[in-house]
Length: 340
Ligand SMILES: [Zn+2]
View 1 (spheres, rainbow, N blue to C red):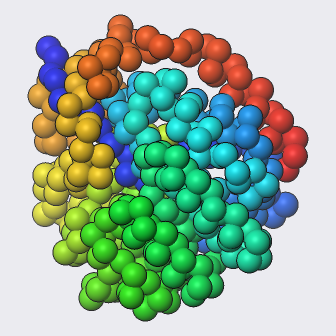
View 2: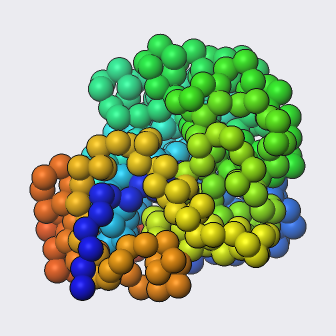
């Protein structure tokens, strides 16, 4: 039995993190979220070059496609390889055959020049007609002037800002600092520690598996009046799995929770990339219904059509060689890990 649906959307991803798997252990075990950033992610992102970014994006796009995810809302950072990085990611996804909305995560962590170059990469990509948003890492790593410039740039191009908001208590000040700028086009990743009356506009992206992994707490997204969508925060793009995590986290918090709520979050991702409504995914299983999917592991697409082209058929991508992608990504991962 098979079923056909539109494509799924991963509403918050970091394609560059595909090469993090198996990385060397940090010098000591991180004890909280700021230490996870400092000892893991900020050591990794600073070591990235464009060739690593290309193959991590190819691998991430391939892994999205094999899960029926036809669009990724990506958030990228590579402080030593900023210029051109968004184009590398966009081209990799196009080569595999999926959609991507790119953003460079601007930050003042590397001084004002780093922030300026990040803003400029967003501007360049959007000015060249790229499908993107303006990225900010998070309010707690940005000066007020950087937040203002990013918001202005997004308004200039008629797009939203893609930013981490209150993923951890360290970012508690974000609602106050972002309040003057947000609108409904913004993508607010995490929101774990957002107060109920936060007053920010935009789609809140819930990343249940990542939040569990980082021990930052449960976002309780059902409390928000904003639209809520689902993301992976870089842990692949298996959105049916992410839906199940969202449902079980909801259920752990409230045993009366119905999977329809988490399913509506999954479906809301399509509002961020409406073109996926025209994509067709033929699943190995039916019905594709929340009460069935939540308890059925291993549902896979048999065929995926993006923009009228079949890009996945009979368990394989049609446009690229998956063995080559995995081999090249492994080679780049070895280069990356050697720099850590
Ligand atoms: Zn993230």
